[in-house]
Length: 328
Image (cartoon, rainbow, N blue to C red; front, side, top):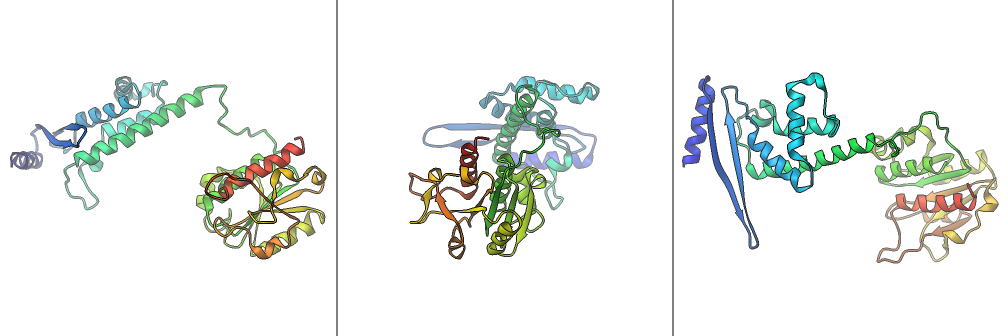
């Protein structure tokens, strides 16, 4: 009842204006069989309705210390960036980490005091503590990313001057369902110097459905490698033989009784004519009607309960084996 009276008093003062009230109280004590935890939640409400962020800073700093971040130094850097913006952001932490810290420690009145309906709300201390943990991990990641980008010997950026090496390698994606898998395969195709990627059927592609998700995992690779979409995989295979080379070696990746271990094939004899790799749906694999039209079927041996790898993981394994045999 005292807590309710205190909250009502704070609410009335904020409405009247010109007053500042401070209330500090313990709102949560959680116990389990092994440990107990007390969470202190303090807030300061002014006539403008803003929180002073003291308790939020304490919560966030506690979480940061648990993962090895110098919370005091980060807090000082955050305050310095507010007090004198002309000095920029402390290079030890970087702009992104400091801004993320500030956004939690010093929330705007609209974000901390209003819900989606525009009503005043009391911040749930359990949710606030959990949120502090998430923010702390994000801050930790941003600090690490900043330091990594500042390290000269770590390469993070693509060279605009670097020209792609292209080999007679092609990928045919037979009705894949995951745009993220497709994006990852595009990234692999670029890294391996593939000449083109062909998507078929329901496979997400750069100019079609799922392109937004595809781009998140492709990270721009879809823009630098040739691609084309076909209604059926049969059309893609016919196009490959007609437009590129009639003796192109077309392989399927699938676990069957007829499959060969991918390392057993001699890819050197196809160094000039090229190799196309057909990758099938994540659940049903390569279409059985297509398998009869392939030159060979290869598989990657596995030793677990599952008999195959994710399709996006299979592609680089086989492609790099081909490049290894080609001595490139």
